[in-house]
Image 1 (spheres, rainbow, N blue to C red):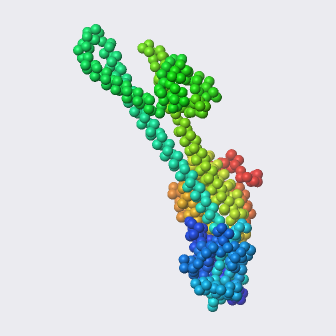
Image 2: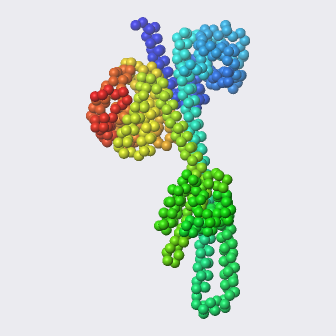
Image 3: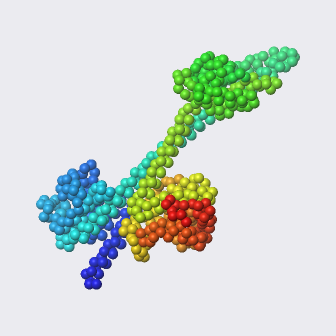
Length: 579
């Protein structure tokens, strides 16, 4: 092999390593601006170009968003219409271009852009999935060596990676924004519900206190009148004191009347047949009727027709047993026709012989609370759907990068959920395992596609890049506020019980039980499936691996459940060949 050929191969190998490092760097960015800055920095180093500018499409124009070698704050960065100037025309045609000497194409060069428009230049549109996101320009001012056709081809590949990174970052930003909005709405609804409950509890405590005062006064008067004739004569001598007590009682009754008339709850009394014998004026606020209109009517006359008979029978069953009415929820029809949801609480009234004479209680309008509960349920459902959509988008992102293992994450999620269910984990833990399994390879978006699809055995350097995906996945997910430790499960799914795994070499109880379950499910599915560098090994060899290394590499209990699911309960992956 001649020296020129050797230098060329070495240079291409170095370029691949730099390109792989760029992929790792760029997918660790947390914002689109950080991603663009890293793209410009890496392009300068990768293409040995002192000047690099990234322009993005916004409102049918190109706008310079990131640069190396030029200060965007000190130059004019007006919007470039698509189709105007050489950059706008390149984006409109979607074509890359090599300029050996750019001065042949641009006659008037502004003083502050002279380095940018002198010497050699390569330009390529940022294209992903047939959509043009912008343009990347790399410049080598004279007297540096002009760019070659090979440099242009490398820039085209680099531009595709950058366009894919921009798409992924925008998708993550969008889903994160949706999650934050849903969480904010949920917190607001929850706080409003707490305030409503607190206010009603205070009113209920005040009503109980006033009622106790009146009952105490009534008992005192009844006791005085029940005394003998001598006691009643003695009562005359303390008439003034009685008058004062009567005044206090009237004042207390007045306060009670104010509470009854001004509280938001409807206070009532029923006879043993269920007819109203007393109703507070608040009834008009609750169901629209005057208190006089209610007297003599049955309590069930206001029930919604769809449930009137059922609720009527239930209440009379309590009457029969002389039991209290507690938190009895029912729908009533307002005088104007709309439905009001009431919560009934009441106690039986008994005579001296213990016979039922009626009921006394209150009706509370809980329609706003029920509406708040329904809104809270809707908010939770929206949050659940948003989270599910985000997880699906992340999973599809990995499959786009690694089409040879399409469906791997979904099958691992199904099997991991089956193991967790068999082990008796809680429903919340199982849902967390399913979520983490569905995106456990999200970090592979940081690995170059040519390595993921390589049909031969990977080199040590290439495998080291593959191993980065666990840490990359953790870095992508750690800022998302999942209800479960999803980022940690993704980080630990290649760890082993004896500490021989990666990326941290954790062992034993230092690993989450969820991570141990995903690790076993991942190994079994991967060994049973086809890979570009080998044919499928089959489920029997996968189970032999788990059986041989249970308690060593894999958690003992998880491994036993895995083997039982296949050997006793006949678990199968979709499309699995029958044994």
